Each structure stands twice: as C-alpha cells, then as structure tokens.
Image (cartoon, rainbow, N blue to C red; front, top):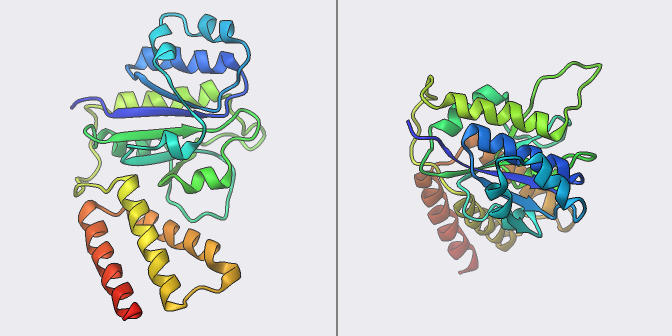
Length: 236
C-alpha cells in the first residue's frame, strides 16, 4: 500500500521552532507537504535550527492567508482538536483516523493543527470533515503542537500496510461538497425555509449532518441533482 497523500496544515503558528520541529518530524515519517496559514513572521533561524535535515520541506512549504485557501484541492480534511464544541461532527482517535486516511492514497488528505495558544477556531473546525482527538489525562490535557503532530502523523505512517479500514465508495472532495451545500442553501432560501436570523446556523447544522454521513461522489451527484430540480420547481 502506498503512503497517503497528506497535507499537514499549521494554522497561525506562533513559535517558529514548532514549525521546524513539525517539518523534521514529517521528514522522519516520510511526509513532504506542509502548508502554513498566516505563520509567525519571527524567528526564521529557529525554524531552520529545529528543522535539521528537513530544510526542503520548509523551503517548499506553501503559505496562505486562510484555511479555506489551504484546503483547496483536498479530498478530506481532519481537524486536530481537544476542545469540546457544539459542532456535531464525527470524532475519532488518531489510530482510527489513520486507518481511514491510509485507505485513500490517491486523494489528498489535509490534517489541520491550530495555534499553540488557542488551537483551532470553531469556524476553522467547521471547514473540516472529521475531528481527531488525542486522549490525554484530565489533569494535563494540553499537548505541545509538535507532540500532537508526532502522535497523529506517526499513526498515519504506521497504518500503511496495516489493517485496512472498511472499503468505501469513491469519496467526494471538499470542493464537491461545498458546491452541494451552496445549492442546498439556494434551494432552501428560494423556498422561504430560512428565518432571517437563523439561516447561518441552520446551514452549519446541515453541513455537520452531511459531514457525519461521509458522502461519496455518487451521493453528492444524486443530492445535487435533487436540490437543483427542487429549486427549479420552487422558482417556476
């Protein structure tokens, strides 16, 4: 089994040393694609020092202004977070997530880590499909960014050639799901379904619902055609 195509995304990293440490870890485990969302502008020498042997990963890293931009081209996105939220997304432990990630080597998978101080925001988690939570002791629940990356990525690396996850139909991409959600939103708006003050939350809940369903490409095509026809009927 070939290694999965993983894009490691670090959001608003505050300490350059952590970027370097993650890059070195990626080199150790065979991952090469790193994306930085609005990284710290300080301490570039610290990045180089901590990324011993992995300078090319730093040099080739993509830098973006937003997580939305960083996720372009990804088939599935996983948010690494421990904070409890009101978001109804599927939550997995690293080893279970890694088994699913290993099943899709042809599709680029994004694994998203938040900043050291605040982690991922709720809006950033909403852009992802599934949550990865690392079990920790209640008395000391927080992990260093590089430590969290080491746990998640080591599971991803070791899952290659291990016990496969159940075989799935060709999964949909993030872009395909976003097109579907926009169509659903337009259809519901045309039908007068939304209350003005609750439209945004309603759509967030709908997206969470479909996220838990793990839509494959055929599912997306079916639903897109269905809502397109419903909207046409409503507008006639």
